[in-house]
Amino acid sequence: MGIAVVIRTENLTKKYGDFVAVNNLNLEIYEGEIFGLLGPNGAGKTTTILMLMGMTEPTSGAAYIDGNLTTKDTLKIKKIVGYMPDRVGFYEDMTARENLRFTGRLNGLDEKSIEDRIDQLLERVGLKDAGNKKVGTFSLGMRQRLGIADTLMKDPKILILDEPTHGLDPEGINEMLNLILELARVDRRTILVSSHLLHQMQKICDRVGIFVRGELLAAGPISTLGEKVLAGQALTIEINVSPVDDKLLSLIKSIDDQVRVEVKDENIVVESQKEIRKDLMKILYENNYELLYLKQSGRDLDDIYSRYFAGEGVRK
Image 1 (cartoon, rainbow, N blue to C red):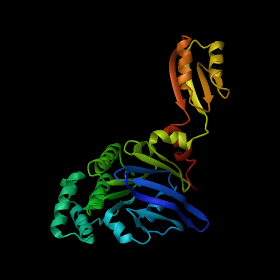
Image 2 (image 1 turned 90 degrees about the vertical axis):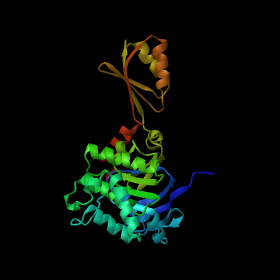
Image 3 (image 1 turned 180 degrees about the vertical axis):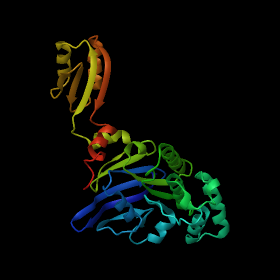
Image 4 (image 1 turned 90 degrees about the horizontal axis):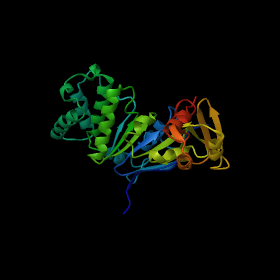
């Protein structure tokens, strides 16, 4: 038996007039995994989440959560999904306990279950000593952790977190990422995380989808994304070798007809359309050249970030 698909979209599309916010999104998220929906600000991630939660209707296509159609089975979905928006809202003049108690009552929990769960969750998110403090006094990191506790009040099997590390300092980021990992690995919850912070998400996600201008460019383990997203883009290898001579340059060019070689300062820059590092290393070893430095770029996370996340992919 295969792994169960918990979240599925079929040609999910959302338009606002002539503007296409989400375009024919086809996505599957599996039970028990952490899936990162990653894209620059304005890519359509939050719009996608709102459609998954039944908070806005798609223009066309469909989305299912645990087999429930999001446009019809909203009550069933709300029972099994905990959603934390990018800006968590609480009653400022109420304590953390009072806010969580309010959420528990909204979800129909009995009073004993509410109090027991509040104690457990405050301790779990590191707010045990702040439970009786008004939320208006909380730092952003404390609010984010309280937001996680709030989503867990109904003990959902699925969590959807929109920019959960937004505005946090490095310590707060690590705490949040570790908590998300625990919720997936220990609790076995399925977690969808939306973020524009690619290098944070690579620490916790089993799979990710690169989402740009309303379209899913690729989805899979982070190790495979470069080949999928940047296919066709030249690979660049920069090496520092001793000695540098005409024989070496000729040997490198002989690897493939499309290989281009250029000497810049003390380094050799090699461009190719395919992976040639093994061939390059073999040439250096067999011909007694000393390799001092090697760096390849063109298909890794930094390249994806530079191309899509550092301004180019952001909608105006």
